[in-house]
Image (cartoon, rainbow, N blue to C red; front, side):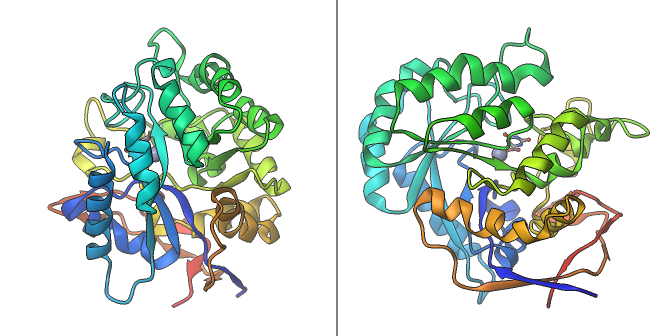
Length: 344
Ligand code: DOR
Ligand code: ZN
């Protein structure tokens, strides 16, 4: 049995939801991660600093006793976000970035940005104040093939945006393709990407393995094997521009197992363990710590976390379900095994 002692990791992309759902999922993240960038796509979305601070307060109040976990807040950009809101966000000290959801791209993105040039003044203010732009990178045109939407977004929206705002710090979230890797790794300074464990461990065949698998459906969708392999090779290569973001996105079981199911994979129950599996498969366990505990903090200009976390290479069985308020939640790998577990 081997153990892996590492600096406590951070999750640079996490959906915590609110209310009873928040209470159900927060302990999983708090047990593993020192900090998390908390996504603002609640209903209604977190569009103001005031709402972000109130949400932060609810997260802190929902933490299990003794937990050491710091929520790092984000604002949800809309066509109507005023530049003054960016100033308030920056002054709060608790809001690190703003999330760009193209309107209609994913869960609760209806209030997102319809035309990115409309928010250029806001992006300019963000660049001046050193706020990070977190980007959901998919075009929403229904004519565009769902597997092409990330690459199309990079060419049509992100590359021009990065040129118009040369000092804006940008994280392309949950990248899925070689095209995204090529862009991020060759881009100017100040551009990075998060990578999920599910995009490292699964390709799109997982959506159809023996039948339709709604719990493997997320946005952006799982991609071809060549893309998955490229992501694995890239994280194993140790680029400081790539870091951990689980995109753990819980939905009630009934909302996933239905004729038109929600996008989102819940992975916080094994938020670091699944990455340990991926890095082990890539023959790069030695690179896990930098990816999980250093690159993101460095990019955001925060100190690396102080504490440590110990993983044990001992397979465990993932429950078929977890409680989720009055609903239930089907975790990634439900009923299957995960090779690494947290030391008690
Ligand atoms: O699959 C996803 N689920 N992708 C997102 O961008 C949003 C997330 C959610 O909030 O459920
Ligand atoms: Zn997300």
